[in-house]
Length: 416
Image 1 (tube, rainbow, N blue to C red):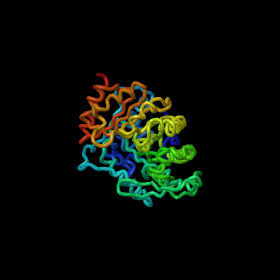
Image 2 (cartoon, rainbow, N blue to C red; image 1 turned 60 degrees about the vertical axis):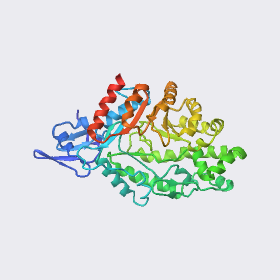
Image 3 (cartoon, rainbow, N blue to C red; image 1 turned 45 degrees about the vertical axis):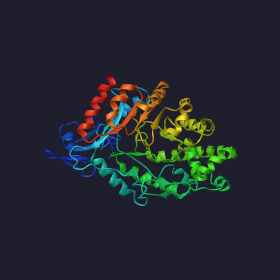
Image 4 (tube, rainbow, N blue to C red; image 1 turned 180 degrees about the vertical axis):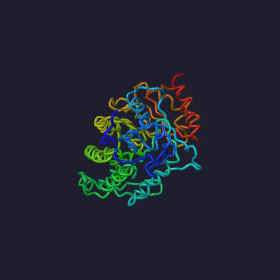
């Protein structure tokens, strides 16, 4: 095949010099790429050679995830409810050769609003020392707090060490005045600016995920105050509906403009849940629903969830804690909802047998099931009890060798 230079990203990775190869120190951080180039395996890893110069093909490779294309294939199949060779599993571990493990502080961006470059540098340190096995991948999502959209509508963020608070109780008159798209809002523009900078620095090294816009009723709770909103559901239900409808409309607008920035370089979409989709997707939620009855959930939450599901190509509901268990049947009856991610809360893990009956109800309805942060010793039992079809598990191991061994076991358990 004759390759035109226009088909490749105009970024120089390496040049042959005599019998050796000179790597670009920033764009080629791994020494093993030298062997890839010199042994002629460039195409396998998403590179092409023009004379003595190595170029990379656009979006075909991720520097910190050398099997990215294979992971994408498995994820495409997963969204369709199919399996290629094993259940989908995301496993991270310290990379072989890393002297010490490196952790990533997910609140780093929120603590570096004026200099997101610092956060990106810290994230890349983490990536260089981390093995992203299976369908895990380096996902730098724009974490400015849970439900940053409330700040676009007048809430005042309070940034703490390991969270951001948005609850800023307002009177209804003030809230209703702020129910419009806010092109000059500081936090909206800051989110766009940071997203754009991080996307510009990603350079096929890592993925950039969407910020946490928040669920409609969660955003309403930030604006009105959770306790006030509980009373409003009884005293002023029409106001709550009107606000929820407007939040959803704005949600679509804010998602659209941020996604346009991300799509400049990202092949697909991701968010805080760390799941990749080739299309437009988002983890939906309503943490506020732990305080309301199924009847109230069906009236004030489900219609707006379904509207979001219809607008998105793929959707997973963040089912957070025992307080939301009574809403399961309502969620399962939303035909456009692709799947459910369960978070059990403190005291027990996602691999506990006490949740298996819920997992089976989800799978029996043909929904995808996402179980994040599972202890690796629980995985075999979970896979023995559940169908591998539509199942996604994330976990962590102590070494790259252990992680690779686990991937082999998962393939065996899938076929058992």
